[in-house]
Image (tube, rainbow, N blue to C red):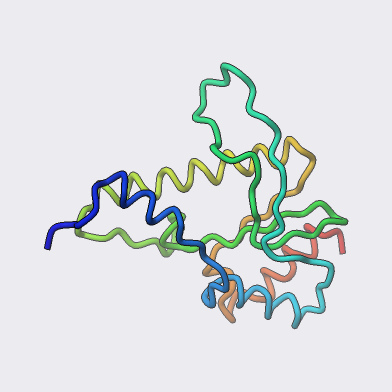
Length: 154
């Protein structure tokens, strides 16, 4: 069945969809933080990004703000939980057989945006911790908690 939207309309419709309460990642990390008695975090706190320099030669970030999954303001730590599929986990990412070129480009754009956001937050004095979805499995929880504690300086 053909798509009823033009590519521009589809992009507009998809941009209005906001993800909150992702049970596979954010809620699992929230439970892990609570179990590890790690406090002082806020979810989806909006952080300003520095304005891009003219002539940087890179694609500019459209927004002047970013919303990490978890923010520890006092320690200036921003934590992102990246889904294995959407961000191209080297161990667990799968590639759809249908429309492979589209998905490869989409995941490459996500990864490029992640690198740019990480770089800009670090320039602003933030520590950035990126966790893969697979790092929240029961088998890896202790390692993930240790990484969080190290990043927090505990």
